[in-house]
Amino acid sequence: MLPPSLKRFFHILLVAIAALAPFCGLGAHDLWDPDEADHAQAARELLVDGRWARPTIAGESFAEKPPLQLWVIKCSALARGTDVDPFDARVPSAIGNILLVYITYLFGRKAGGPWTGALAALAAATTGEMLRTARWCQVDALFAGLFAAAAYFTFRLLTKPNLYHCAAAGAALGLAVLTKGPIAIALLVVTIAFDTLFTAEHRRRWLGRAGIYVTGSCILAVAVALPWYFALAADDPGGLGRSIVHENIDRFLHSQDHNNPFYYYFAGALWGSFAPVSLLLPPAICFAFHSSRDDETIWTRDRSPLRFALAGLIGGIVLLSIASSKQGKYLLPLSPFLALIVADFARNVVQFGARWHKVWFTAVLSVIALVSVIFTLFSTATTFFGPRADLAFAAIIAAVGGPKDPVVHIKTAIWALVPVGIGSFALLAVGIHSRASFRLAWFLAPLALAVGIAGAWVVPQLDPLKSPREAVEFAMQRLQIRARDPGEPRYAVYFPNRTDEKSVASWTGTSPFVYYADASHRRPLILRGADAVEEALKDPRPLVFVTRGDYLARLRGSLRDRLPVCFQKTVGSRTLVVVDTGK
Image 1: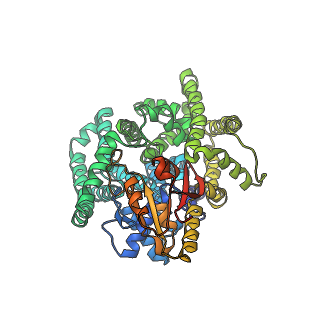
Image 2: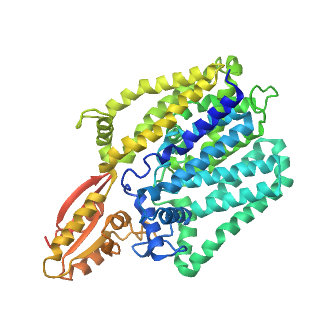
Image 3: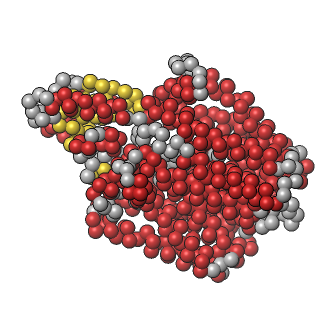
């Protein structure tokens, strides 16, 4: 057996590797279309204009999300003296990963000691969704970390209600609201509601002193977030309505994109987003329901965290399933709950193994989970890279020393992954059945290290498939050529009038093109719909603009014929085109 001091060092080392791995190669590749440049350009304009309250893109309001992520990006750029580069843009996500991993460790340590905490932290850090999102410039990773902190300190109110835990929960919840909106409060309320429903002992506490402190935390959270909403209302009254009504109520009830059926998370996204840990989820949930109500306990010192985690996982999935817009990344705030359930299972199953492995349905559920994970992972990859998925796999093969232009087909890759998935499951099974349970940690530690390797080496190789830089640089070259001719050329961005589909007037879809444009062209002419294009063509000066191929295809033929395409490139699931009317 390892001495206690060496065990403690090992725990700290594993958690540190998992938490800090996303910083490796964080800025090694361009901002990818379609979403990363949205946030980076909005933060850049806050930096350049010296503003904090009202984010903009190309001078137009960008109030789709509260600005905490943009503030962190701006502060990173100020500290490093940069103009919001890819590293700055992804810093909030990496910070969110650190927070989520550490809070998950605290949850696990509270439930079953340092080993359970280390296993839970590694499980949370090595899920497929977190590996991607921790170095992806969106709000989800930062939101997940802040919500995890709010959930942890709220749980501490259940067991030890005091002003410190109340203030910590309220502050974390308020910052989560400033990251993604009131959905943070809704997730926490649902967690408490399901915990009240599941556990009579917790119900008495929530209806007593703990409930009073939770109410105080929610009030503090509103107080933390409300000043920004007031500031936005003063600067842009219309932006306040868009931020609150459209981004929260409208998108929750009838979103214009990512519409999926109610069972979307249960049918596949849950397993794919949390793979490979989700391979153990079916038997782990069965075990959790059994052991959290059984008087006999082996490793678990405090079963309250496990009950709270069950409530949070089930309640959160139900709430998110009600929403019309569903994506795997929306499940990230629930990953500490799932990781705790799996880690507790891994620590206890050595003694309880004689019970659970004889129950045939747990084995069947595990096989179903394995199959779901394999196919969902590749479905996700196909969606992420669109029609260029084969090229993405080819780029990965080339990055690890294979042929430069290999012929790769997704169907072939799926069959190749099946034995890998089965082998991974077998390694996990060996780890949890051994009394030297740290073998599971030794299996997860290389996964955490692989995060850094993928970020520093493999991921940048995919850059040409997802970066819009080439299209924008080509447009800049056309502008330089036209500048030599009589008449100053104009740089524009076109997108269709989406009033019927999406009522947010501030949304432009232009940010990738604005971000990579030369400094003098970062406030382009914005053409909304066919009428705006007609009006712009009345000016005899050359017009160079970038747009998406599907946007251009929506124009009527007579107008489209007047817009010669001189450059076209497929980026992910979209085709970008450069139009030059002076051609």
